[in-house]
Amino acid sequence: MSSAASIQRKTVDITALLVAPGVCLVLLLFLYPFLYGFVLSFSAHEGAGLRNYVKFFSTPFLSQTIATTLWISFPATVVNIGLALPIAFATRRHRLQRLLTAILVVPITLGTVLIAEGLLLYLGPQGWLNRFLLVTHLSTLPVHLTHNYWGVFLSLVVSGFPFAYLLLLSYLTGIDPVLPQAAATLGASPWRQFIHIYLPLLVPGLAIAFCLSFVQAFSVFPSAVLLGAPAGPTRVISIAAYQAAFEDYDYPMASAIAMIMAGVQLLVVVLILAIRLLFYRGPTVGAKG
Amino acid sequence: MRDAGLTAKLWAGSIWVVIGFFIVNVFGLIAAVVVNSFATRWLGTWLPAGFTLQWYGSAWSEFQLDSVLIVTVEVVFAVVAISLLVGVPAAYALARRDFRFKRAILLLFVLPLLVPPMTYGIPLATVLYRLHLAGTIVGVILANLVPAVPFVVLVVTPFVEQIDPRLEAAARVFGAGTFRLFVHVLVPLLTPGILAAGLLVLVRTIAMFELTFLTAGPDSQTLVVALYYSVFAAGIRAGQSVDAMAVIYMATTLVWLLIALRFVNPSQLVTRVKE
Image 1 (cartoon, each protein chain N blue to C red):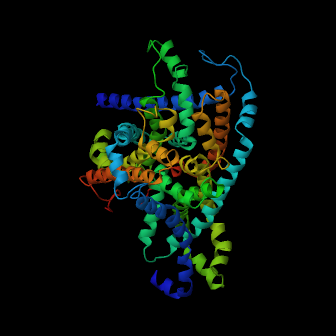
Image 2 (image 1 turned 120 degrees about the vertical axis):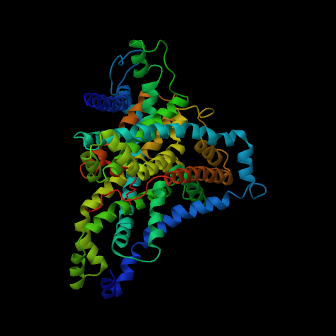
Image 3 (image 1 turned 180 degrees about the vertical axis):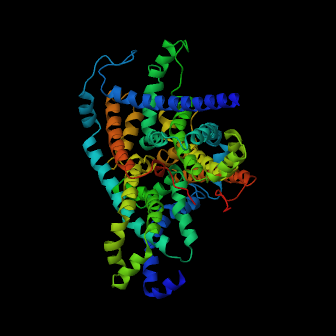
């Protein structure tokens, strides 16, 4: 690097400067708005300081949104990761794996708005699911799965499970197959290979996949409005932030809610990463031997 | 030993049952939208009473889909073009050079992909409103660039790393400047990476709801935002009409997804977090 760099001294600066437009763009459109929002959140229509935050935490209608959102997003994340881990493990070298990933990428690509509209029809009182349950006598009355908690929860599974699966699959395929093969040579069953080899090596990936899935689920918006009960049981924190900004035009309050949203997400991520530190850290490839 | 074999079979079987159950339901929700968009009347039966194409015509005029589609195409192609123009050189610099704050810059490029759009979208929309850019197509494009540029950088960087640096050295020996190096050596060699990044940004931008929703005005809605508003106002229009628009949206997205899948691995559509 150093000899090549010294020969090309004249052009080094120009080449390195190619990163500048991208950096400027992210600074101006991502970091600056965030800092602007942070500063703005401490101003208010009347008075200043922590007023917006005090108002948020002293108004149950606002502060409850944190618990409401956690109550939807946390179980959804646990279900998504809990399903994705064994399925990614079982299909990691399967011949149908590429087809499966291609199918699972469809709900991610279609996005939450379309999933919400589809689930409204599919899970609704006249939908195919209820029709199936009634015809097979699995249920005697139509099951209410839309315009309540379950609609939002299921939409988070439909979009979140494929996301978690694809993430975990890329981590699993990154584990050197030599390690479990060594364990197998010593007589470890697939189950023991999983517990003693894969799982410890997968903890970092699992932690990151959990964090990303959770953060996505915590910022749920379109399905909470369309498929949930946005006035009550699924009034998530994004709805509160959106209403403050675009219905009350109270940008300082909206910024404060956005900061609280980011704060809760950061808190959970830090918590997960702290738990992850209790486990094995090290290379996921075998040493030469 | 036989027991172990049996439990393994049961386990593998139950895994595929869960996968099948998930796919059947996803297929069901998509098919429900498609069937309803062609339905004349659909109440209390497995399938509609009859089929018609009329909802596509009415959706087209009711939701002014011609102007929505024009906006969508403008936004998506502007975002793809700008993010490639800005992102590919940045990826090249990051792959080839060491400079101060490089780690900080990498973190800066990763953050917009990890923080959910709803979280940074509200402060971003506030700033764009102050600048009178929100509500315009320029504001929508700027907002969509925030995740697009870092995405291009992270997708293209490994492609640059695969190129033999001696090719660039040879071009330099023959007197090519950075610009000519890019046009005659790097861009041709990087075509697979640029194509992959461009297609992925395209698919992600068509489906990007939150940022467009927060920054768009009535004349700068993309297809997915128009779809949201029509579902939100369900009851004003016929459900079939809304679903006809949903099918148009779905077709737009899936065609590009199919093209993209020929060039990229599906898992690349998800955030890249390989260290």
